[in-house]
Length: 481
Image 1 (spheres, rainbow, N blue to C red):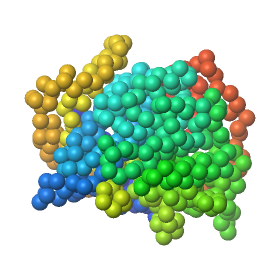
Image 2: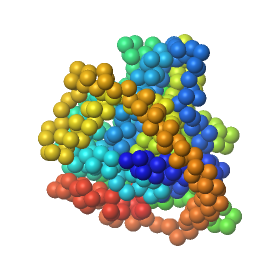
Image 3: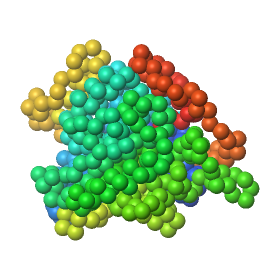
Image 4: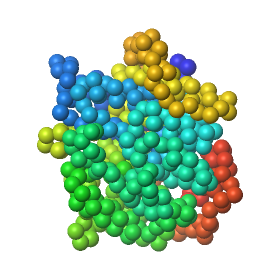
């Protein structure tokens, strides 16, 4: 296990170096996704760097939103999410947990990253997503949007995921699922936080035939109009802060494979990705929309997913108002947003990298429950609901943060002896390898003729198989989102 952790740390360091060195140009995310946007990763922090040690209640009067996206089978790390929630509450904060989609499928093979699906024995896929949902219930998630991978299996599997959740799904551009569990938007009440925070969700129109059963539109203008109208509605209902949980992404391939989309081109005829497009369907493109009474610009922050991009924002001078944060894939990072309860404003936001999770520590009760969930799935048993009383002994006998910190000092010795080598080699090779993959001059058309129907007779119409989707390509190209 320690070798696995060490390998993951080194791969993570390599990926971080890729992102940081390439932030002014091409960025290749953990899944091999390519982004030309001038994204920023300047708000990746150690957990300890966020703590005011002189004030044990340094987050009193604050609301903290903890965010995840594209978990893709990394369910063992939910123990750290629970640990972070505990620590934020100990510091005096009101805490809200949210997710931006793709929580119900594994990703056993990930380019440039040591996948965490094996840690949980691919229990997410084996349970058809229920394992992840049960754990999210235990951790205490409040809101989530659906991602494209939630639609991979038959409709009854999607219904089971939705019905198993104790949290609310917010998806404004999915019509056919609207009900008590799936709403266009939701606003927090005073029992959770004194700030009225409005959450609404948007799902990518990519490969729209996955969503035909939900009355879903794949038209980009419908996406823009929905975002604007919903933001206006949320504001009209009294939301003081508006957060969009979006599963849209910023990857180049989203535009390359968007039916009917026309690129602007530079003087050499190369397609321009590093701009916002009024008819684009990436999260950044929403800010190019300038319709009458444009509600998009009322959005205070987008917590994005889908393209597996680690980003705390994009070039603010070039695209003012594009406030977007995303945590990569498989809990490479955990997102944090701090809101002042008095001023009703976002005062801070950042990502905590997995290499600093030992500073957080696992919630021992949730860790014990996760182990039981995995065991139940592997033995073909019904997954039990979480009952904290059943795991009281774990809390009383395990000081996980201390154990984790001790383990980390050992790992840190190994990491410190190798980390500089990794960074040095990354400095000389990363940009060159990613820069050569950016320019795409041949992808002038996209074959959408196959995107016509959903095979309800199979368990995985999006990937042509139940538990082996990681060996196949998406119908829209090489993407692994």
